[in-house]
Length: 114
Image (cartoon, rainbow, N blue to C red):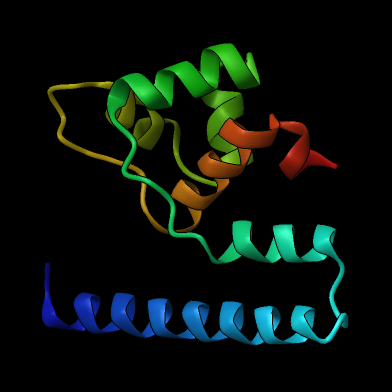
């Protein structure tokens, strides 16, 4: 990974950590509800690294859509989804796509459609 990408990831993590810390402080003063705090934790939580089996399972069992429809929801190419689902490609979703996968995995496709 390049130094620029590493710096961007570190900066993103720092910002998310600070957002979560601020939200926890606000909740301590009863200024954020438990539901909103749960949402904030989900937003700030780093997405896991998804294996090809995980991606396919989320698409087939949770979302129940084709690769092209799944790609459309994630705003990526069909080729990207195909690579993620191919164990030999070595490619994994990252960034916004990984975060959307995390939401779909936890709450279903409705979490990003509604």
